[in-house]
Image (cartoon, rainbow, N blue to C red):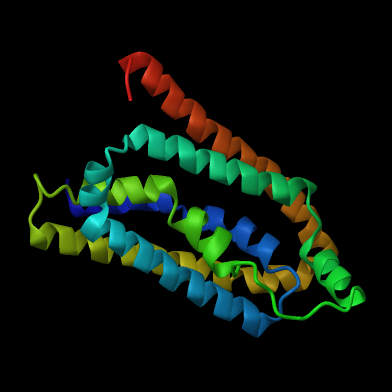
Length: 211
């Protein structure tokens, strides 16, 4: 597989453009510096996760006996559950206000939005994890090929970082109320993508007759 094909494959599964709505939804109540920090952290975590799968993914999946299709279905379910929280849950400003009204500690034990859902499963999606494992198959590709694939992956994630940086002017225009609306709409889109991921895996299972 040549360099362009690898780039296109990773672009599709990482989907830098598709990350923008998720980024807008989860950072609606943040200041501009907080958004930049979140974007950088999401990019770094995504690189670390995908590099882990580049180096150890094939060994791990084979050792555990996990089917790639099973991994895809699990990832789709996780995405769908997060989409439901975007649709039916409170917006970020509303949650923050409830915390203050209840006079609860400001410390938040929930994972940072940079980690979930931005890094995993938005950027480092199950599809991206599987793609990086297949593109660096130890039985077919040498160290040089795998290194180049890793650099291509990092370049796609840097494009995703640039896309998230451009989301700040959008937030400035639409405000928190607009972001809350976007969150609901994007939740529906994300739920559709997640359902399609699961259905695609189930169709392949039905056609092949096995995982």
